[in-house]
Amino acid sequence: MTVETEKSRFAVTIALVSVAAGLVGGLIYYLHRSPVRQAQVAGTDAWLPHLILTGVLLAGLGVIARRRRWDLLTAPLRRRATARLAATFRRGRSRPAHWPRLLVVALLAVVQAWLLFRAAFQVFAGLDPNFPVNAWGGPSYLGAMFCHYVDIALLEAVAAGLQYRLLSHPA
Image (cartoon, rainbow, N blue to C red; front, side):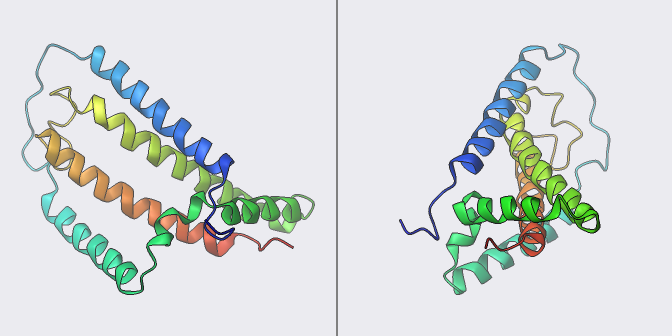
């Protein structure tokens, strides 16, 4: 593994903690589920927009495959990304003009951790029949998971891309 592709312990730890917290939270949600079944409301499934979003996701993966850049999928977990994040905060904290940029970078990092939490939360929480009944892709577990994971993958990609553009390069 080269320095370019070496994973950051800090970033991997944050990702693993987010996923573990999501799994535990989802399990707690499932264990406290209601025995009363909710009725499905017509029109809550949102399949058409998610089929379009699936096309967008597949097109993006096609570009990555064509360029043979599979490493982009794990870029936020690399040491280089963590070094750029640290450099951005080091340089910007004493410059009030850079504080909005720091706020956006921090919010994007929180969004990325939240999305991992949310993806993991749904693994167990989705087993509650009431959880996916009116979800996008519902009322089935697999349909809801599919639609939510398409959303999460696209939002992670957008957050990572924006963060990449906003981060400073280490000295």
